[in-house]
Amino acid sequence: DRPTPGSAPARPTVVSGTANVAVVATALAPPVVAVGFVLGAAAAQIGGAVLMTAGVWASALALLASTNRTPRPGRTLRLVAGLTPWVPMVLAVAWAIAQHVVGSPALSVADMGRWHGLANGVGFVLLGLLATGPVVDGGSERAPGMTGVDRAAEVTA
Image 1 (cartoon, rainbow, N blue to C red):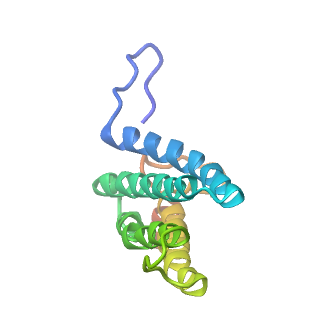
Image 2 (cartoon, one colour; image 1 turned 180 degrees about the vertical axis):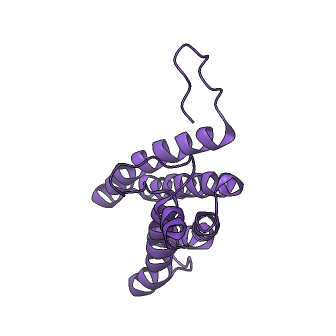
């Protein structure tokens, strides 16, 4: 919801605060992980994985917190997208730890692709984008919180 001209700015909400944490953490994490790989620095590689996990989990929390304000079917997509990354991101941290701590359990790269990559790519990213993406239908107005999926359901109903 946008404030009207001359009105007081909206107070930050839990969702917006969580989303801000998500943006910062997911923006900072890749270069930290890269430094870890290039320099062989365990603290950077593991720390970057933890930072990325925190950012992804913050994004998931923001999706879950906004679920009740979203019409169906976008609500279902937000719920699934918000629940998907919790276990796969633990796998990422475990993999990063296993690169530096002998005897730490971790999946192979191929299995990480299957379990971590596929789950997050489809369940979190794709469904999350479908749930929160803009409506593209010639510029018509949409209700706050309405997604492309909601609009498609409305048009076909």
